[in-house]
Image 1 (tube, rainbow, N blue to C red):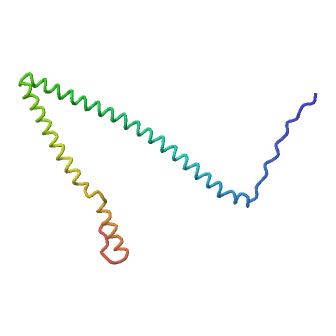
Image 2 (cartoon, helix red, strand yellow; image 1 turned 90 degrees about the vertical axis):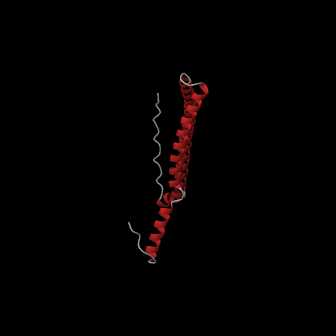
Image 3 (cartoon, rainbow, N blue to C red; image 1 turned 180 degrees about the horizontal axis):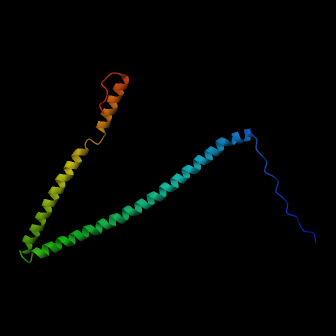
Length: 142
């Protein structure tokens, strides 16, 4: 019986330096396209996870809001043991109004610090630095 000897694959042809240099633009283009596709895939995956997380957190906030309503109802019922029902509801509403006013004032003060919404201090600093570089103004104090 004659056994078939495995045929050895011919050695790969070595490319000339000119052929290799000619392939560089194609290789770079392919690499950039693959990196962009990888980036798109990663961003899409992360945005999907972010969207799902935000949806679940919104559901949790909705349930929490319902729970606050139940607790306020319980507070009215508890006070109605001591006061008439309408008076208990007014006491709870007054307490909520006071809490809302305090939170509103705190929020107003925080928002006031954020206006105007553009970085005016940084812009002024850059202008001073540019004037110092041009030699037309005083140097910025650090």
